[in-house]
Amino acid sequence: MYALVDCNNFYASCERAFNPELNGKPVVVLSNNDGCAIARSNEAKALGIPMGAPAFEYEKVFRENDVKVFSTNFALYGDISKRVMSILAEYTPDVEVYSIDEIFLKFNGFQHYDLNSYGHKMKDQVLK
Image (cartoon, rainbow, N blue to C red; front, side):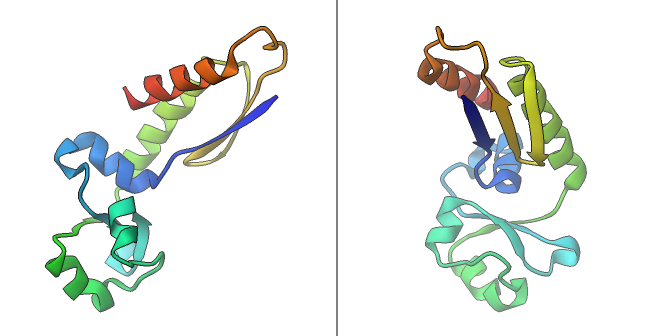
C-alpha cells in the first residue's frame, strides 16, 4: 500500500501557519520579484485568480477583495517542508520525498492497521 501526501496550497498554507488570522481569507504568494501568483488559497482560486497570474494584472482584484498578497519566503517554506516530511517519516520507514510539498509513503507490513485512522492521525499531527 502506498500513500501520496500532497500539502494543499503549500506556500499559502505556510503563511497561514504563522498568521492564523489569514484562515478563511484569500491568500496569494507571488514568485521571485513579485511577478506572478505561484500559490493561491482556495478562497483566492474562487475569485478566479489563476496560477501564474501576473500580479500587476490582478492588483484591482487583490485590492477589491482584500486578498492578502505575500512575497515568497523560500527559507520559511523549506523549513516547514522539512518539519512536515520529518513528521510523516515517523509513521513509516519507507518514504520518498517527491517535492517541497509531496511525499510518497510505503506501508508494507501494515495490513493489520486501520490505515484510514492512521492517515487521519498523520494529518492531525502535521496540522498541529
